[in-house]
Image (cartoon, rainbow, N blue to C red):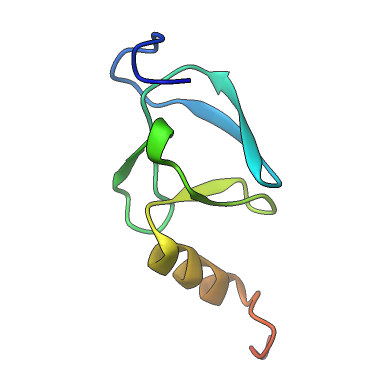
Length: 76
């Protein structure tokens, strides 16, 4: 889906899958779970299937993994 297929300037609802995602409600962006910044749907590259949340970049994704205690060398 690209920004010209409708959805206006509103937040999309997405189901995050392994290596893909499914748009449940059209929109132009999602919100990063760590930074709160908008991420354009056509630029979305980082998300968590387990937590069903999006991230603006790799650093935000790593921070989410740290907060969740999900890194292999991290004590729980």
